[in-house]
Image (cartoon, rainbow over all chains, first blue to last red; front, side):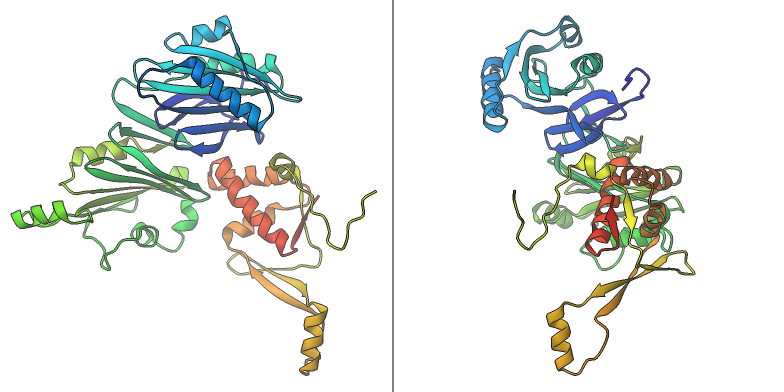
Length: 297
Length: 127
């Protein structure tokens, strides 16, 4: 495959970001794990996480070697990074490794970023090493594990969202027709939804009716509609601003302040939804920022 | 030489191999196009001999071959129409994803699940 001609796309998930050929699809996704596939075969794997205290490349490499030996029966050995990889990964402390199987070989790198204390394992599965050398170099040079603006980008399966770093991913679901990513911070619970195809879902109901069927809420009555148009609907629920209500909201189990917006992206044939819950009054700028950063790519 | 006893062995395909297969419709299926454009499939089901014998004892003298109906929705109808005996599962997925502007992986999950259901009911086979 000629990767020079293939368009590249951004993939971002839970802190890491990189560019990859558009033919490479996310095959497996976990909270801190990504496996990319090309024609249903694994091509690259990412595993990452925050490290508390000092980071030892040797310890991680020997742990990886044990894992490989147990699972695949292959020995992983440390190998020097090529000049191209070293240049691409200049800002990280990196250790290269490789392994050889009967039909497939692997080459990878363990990275540690001193700025954000994040350690990442990147492993390329190679059938023809000359073919993937160029693409791996380009991918690695685009790799980032943190941003300066304290925002986290999420870009997989054609959706892209930007969230503040205070929101942590608690749940994700990518099913045919329904995507969901749920986040939590001290103050808020945020859920991003995406439904499709909109032409089918909205064939005999409008957005408000769809919201009723898709979002399960404990209330029998719908929320008062603040803004509604053919393309977007929005609901909110806030208790009366009394002292008694203020204290009651802080101690009761269910969050009192609720808000959600649904909008129809006609040109992309999908419906986006943002649901936010909190114990304290919701800041409209926060709501707008979440919605503005949530888009189709 | 190994001889299998009784049960047929199922061939395990990898995902890549399965996507290259071409779904073929069962020729015994009756296909009816409804006013809505959706498809109603009528397919034969065979009653197991012991069940047929039991039914006969209770006075039922019907045919051993019965039929069932399956009403496909718009998405199911689209996939059904895309199965022309030449397109592979992969090609069907690409066309389906293009038509409804879905991500390829998302379309793959939906279409393969649907094909599996059709296969289990004996409505299609894979070539």
